[in-house]
Length: 381
Image (cartoon, rainbow, N blue to C red; front, side, top):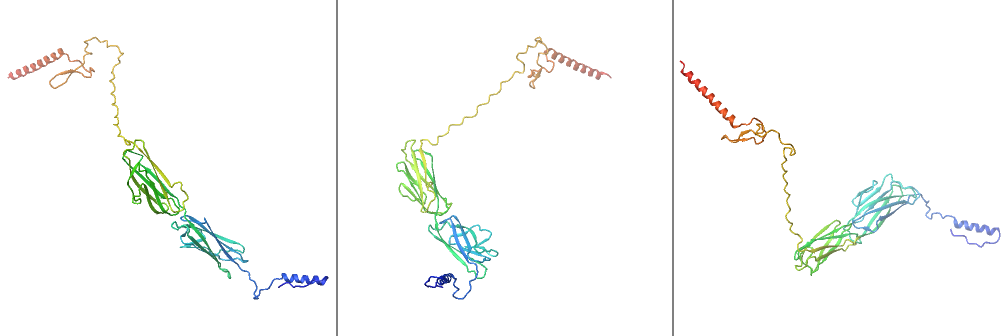
């Protein structure tokens, strides 16, 4: 109702008219359609993502928040989130379930009071094959079983961004003779998290020092600068290149041949300090000298024989020629030869010439006596 316009006169009548005019201007207007305002929940949905922009090949988290802006509680609130292309759900919380690109959170028993809110965090993985600058659209919707509550929805559009780290390492034959072969081994690795596109290796050589003799198929002949187009590398993918060159035959000993290779990519890199690697080869007239003969072990000296007796002992007081000084005579061969006891231990009486003759004579006497007795016995009747 519009204020009542009047001319306020002096006195009580004028003051009463002014009060009526103010009251008329502040009174609420009844609904024009005749309906009475009702109390009900009002759902609102908001959504954020971290990081923003999304890192291609990396991980991210969407957070969906449902707020009840009405004046009555919303019962059995359900949040349905539809992930964008190239986005897959990670390990979901206990109150969320995923099927394909759809994630459903909440449901029966979830109540959002008036003026309150509930949030769900949805972890996701970003496909490493997405292109830099792709727009990723994610939609979320909230609903309630409370009568009269309208569904609420929102969508979030986020840019996907490439982040990668391409690394190169190079090794070389350390020493070589003049005119010898030098083998370079170059390894290129995509450390991720995104695909690395248009990967190229360049390796300039010095024509005054070396001649290129063998190249891998990724590196067609291109003059003194070797160029290798590797295309797209997936995160973790590794490519090895083996390049062979020949050192100049007239290079003096001690010449150093330094060679550096550099890798490039069309993708955005987070680290460029590992895009170059160098290796050195030194000219040596005899890089692999023939080893001399290995000396054998020194002969072990035999121990000197030790005397069995005490060299300081006094000589045996037994007079020379005593039977105890003579070593025994023992036979040395079947012919009857004798020798003294080689051990010299004197274990028995010595066999001298006189006793031996006596023994022979005694034996002959006994034999003769026996024969005589035998003859006499034969003659008796």
